[in-house]
Amino acid sequence: MRICRFDDNKFGLVEGDQVRDVTAAFGKLPQHAYPFPRVDLMIAHLDMLKPAIEAAAREGKVYALKDLRLQSPIANPGKIVAAPVNYKKHLDEARGDPAIHHQNQVGEIQKVGLFLKATSSVVGCGEGVAMRHADRRNDHEIELALVIGKTADRVSREDALSYVAGYCIGLDMTIRGPEERSLRKSLDTFTVLGPYFVTADEIGDPSGLDLELTVDGEKRQVANTRDLILDVPTLISWASSFYTLHPGDVIMSGTPEGVGPVLPGNTIRATIAKIGTMDVAVRELAPR
Figure 1 (cartoon, helix red, strand yellow):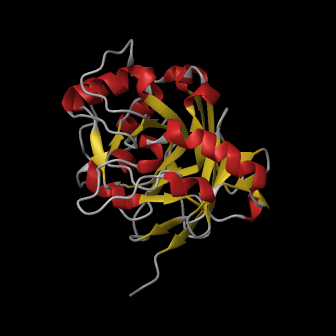
Figure 2 (cartoon, one colour; figure 1 turned 90 degrees about the horizontal axis):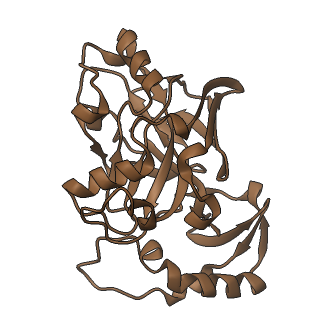
Figure 3 (cartoon, helix red, strand yellow; figure 1 turned 90 degrees about the vertical axis):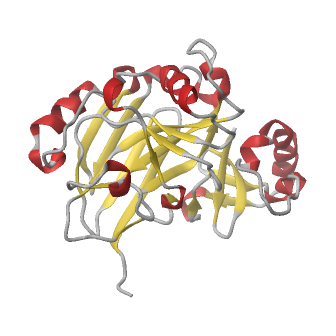
C-alpha cells in the first residue's frame, strides 16, 4: 500500500500514476484531547486503517499524481533519528573535502553515534526546500527513510524489521560549516519525506535498493543500500538501545557519496527503487 498526503491534508491511495482520495477513512482515527499522544496516529493505527482505506478507495475521487502538491506522508513524527556517514565512500569523501568537514572530526558511525533532527524540519516534496542561509554551502543528501510501526525498546537486530511500518525517500539537507551537525540539518524544510509512504510488505528486504539523486538532470549520487555500513536492522536495534522508538518515528539511514551544493532555482530529483521518485524545488527563503 502506498499512502500520500496531499493538497490541504487530504489522503490518497497511490496506484501507479493515479491517486484515489481516501480521506474519509481517516475519520476512523481516535480523537484525542490535550495532552496529545507522542505518536503519529496514522502509523499507530495503520492495521485498523488499511481495510477502511481500501473501502474508501472504491468510491474516492481519482486524481493524477503529477497534479498534486504532496506533503510529508508522516504528519507527526515524534523523532527524526539520523545516521551520519553510514556509507564508506561518503566517509572517505567527507574526510577528504574541507568544504564538507570544516575541520570537524569525521569519525566512523560506530564511534560518533546517531543524532536527532528537529521534527519542525519535516516537509513533503511538494513544499520544497527553502534556503535560510543561501550565502553558505547547502548540500543535498538522499537517504532511505524508515518509519517505525510499533513501540521498539531495546529490540534485537534479528527482530528489528518487524518493527518497521514502511519506508519513504528522505532528503536530508545540510548547511556546511563548523557548527554541530544537528543544528545545521534542522532548519525548516531540511527534512523532505516522500513522495508517499510505502508499507513494508511492498519493499521486503531493504538491503538491496538502488538510490539515485540528480540536480537539474546532473547525476550526483548513485548507490545501493547494500553498501550501508550499518544496515537497517542494526540501526533500529542500536537506536532502540538508547531511546524507545514510537509509531511514526523516522530513521534516516545515511547518505552515500556524491553530496554536493544546490542553489535557489535548482530542482532535486531523488529516486529509490520500489518506492518511487520525488522532485524537490529549491528556493531562497523570502526576507521578513
